[in-house]
Length: 198
Image (cartoon, rainbow, N blue to C red):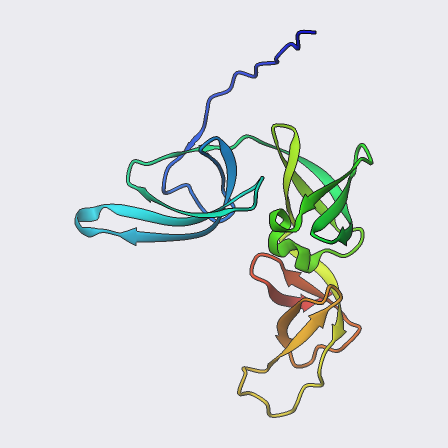
């Protein structure tokens, strides 16, 4: 049986060094990579380079790449869909598609630090490359419960009035001294930091 290939004619968008930012997804050597770190370096005579660390959305491998002035990467064509987090088993993180109710899993490496904020039912954006789920994106702000919070000590300003608390996922972050165990807080998932009480 011959499978008909559906060609979608679209202009390939190229990303120059001024467009490549944290979270940008590009095709490098034919595979999708997400940019996880960047550093712009101004060279003499007005030239600039961009140092990057990129994570392969399929294998989870991290590479360091440096781009010079005219270097460009092809923007990776990713589809997005919605899913909710189910559970973690070993090195696999399980989700359910919102529209089809199909379950799928991603390796912990591909989910990355997002796993620190996943509680049952958390809604995420699924990124698909050539129809296959390769990664997820969390909302920037997420509500989560505090399971451990040592009592704040009055006059303890040596640490700028903050303390380490534990979230219901077991992840620890810094929060103000007044946060108590059992409270729900809003956390910025990009900066891994406390925002406010929920």
